Image (cartoon, rainbow, N blue to C red; front, side, top):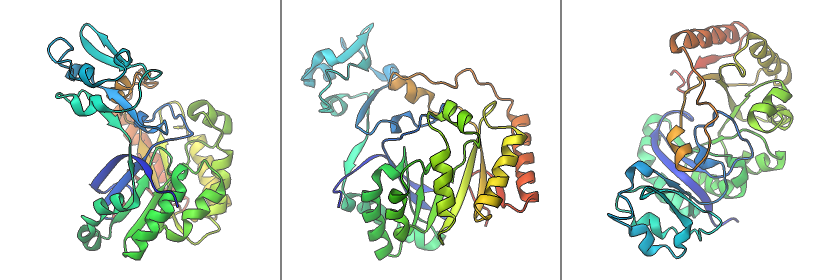
Length: 316
């Protein structure tokens, strides 16, 4: 049994990833590099530090981080304000995080045990029971933590808590099999049906993802599929028709709900804090016309007998 999982965020009372009110744990590490990813802090499978330079008081007026850092050259300043880290020198002691009075340094990732996760989960058990909610896991890519999540979900099921596993399904089928017995609902994406376009925009082909979805359709587990609708990437009628054909012909229509998610420019500040480039900064969207386009896609899927909604909240 894996004793620790690397969690970078926990959201309580969320209504977006599964039914009812939920507690959602986000795990670090992802094999994909989607250009539109809103959680850049999730990509690397290790603890990271993010710098919010606008919050920095300056090393002349404060300097608390310098006082505690064992490798002071790891802290990189510009005009007196901390702007980034030299990770080749940083020891990941994270002393600067605790020392900073302005919270200009954010620690992304914390190793947590099963019991530490359950302590958080149990706080909201009454809400799960009243709303039909439960626990969800996401990422990054939750499949990278399948051994840990299997044990976490096993405890959840022993305590009567509904479980939901969100994954891109880019992994070995054996990793999915590990969590199948203890997961009530799965959520996965179909980002594009063309393998080359998929690779161009996510860094990987869709072959393994589609293969796993086909294998999954042979189980008795419920599945929600999402399409993040991205301008000039997958927002064509041709791609939507190919997706519908795949769901009906390859998955035998075994999809509880298809959810269409509208592109939003999310996470730009987090990209800056991590010294990463945000690839969608030049993308402009006419929101009203784009939403109408997505609504027409939803009408198309429903006309083909695929239950489709815009957004993540399932109507009761």
